[in-house]
Image 1 (spheres, rainbow, N blue to C red):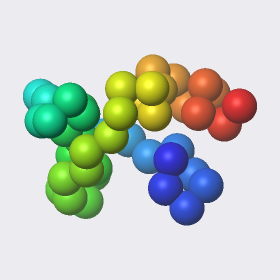
Image 2: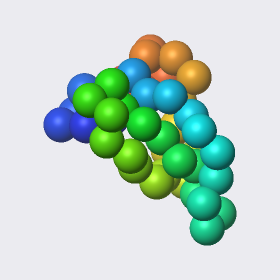
Image 3: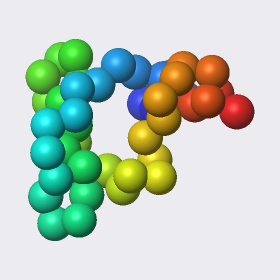
Image 4: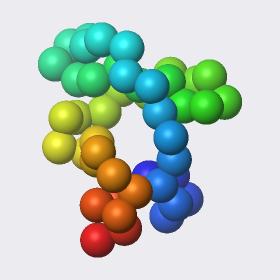
Amino acid sequence: MKNNKPIRVIRLGHKKGKVRLYRMDWECELRDEEEIFDHKGDAKQ
């Protein structure tokens, strides 16, 4: 979620116990596994 909207990301490995994600604007983000959803509907709940 970014700005209260679900966004599409690509998972590329782990770093320091967090998941490395690349957003569609190609910026890298590190997040905990619990903060990542499989479906858009899951994120909105």
